Length: 142
Image (cartoon, rainbow, N blue to C red; front, side, top):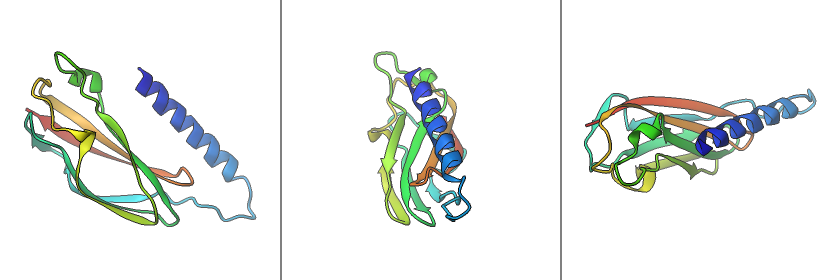
């Protein structure tokens, strides 16, 4: 539940920041959302328990990148029998472009006691002006 509160708070801060920052016509401001190109994971990829979710992606912004928030929707369903699997993280980005190569999501392989199923992997790429773009991929854990 704390993750939902955190996400809701972050979205509200971003909306307030965008509204307050876009009131002046004298300053051009940054209204372009950052972009991302993923070579992995790809949507509809099937993962086995014990396998890592590896990210290979490039991120770009016209001014400066900030971070990418990654999560698996319905994370409460993914809890193992003994301990929960932390399925959200923030990856810091910088500059106008940055690549992630062979980055292991969530810092570990998929635990062996995770429930199998189809899940939505979400990436929210954010720039320093709080413009953002969402990328969603369906993945299956068997």
